[in-house]
Amino acid sequence: MTVPEEKAAPAPVDKATDRERMQALLEQINAYIEHYHGGSVEMVSFDGKVLTVRLGGACLGCPLLPSTLHGWVEGTVRQFFPDIEMVQSVTD
Image (cartoon, rainbow, N blue to C red; front, side, top):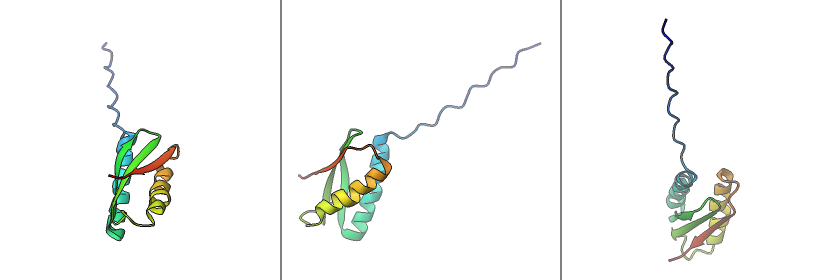
């Protein structure tokens, strides 16, 4: 009598890191801002708690930049990353 050989469990599917998920989310936000407003947003850094972005294009010099940053970008990011502490922008 032989003992049946145990089958190995399938390898777990790699989950995207929070940084990768954040990058993908910002790419979607950027596509919308770029298409409808001529602006742009890109990730500079993300440490899990603080997101730093760079706004560009038509956003530069626009008086609505703070609304875009905090209302639109931060508001959307917080829906998917509720534990984020701060969203900030840098300028070159």
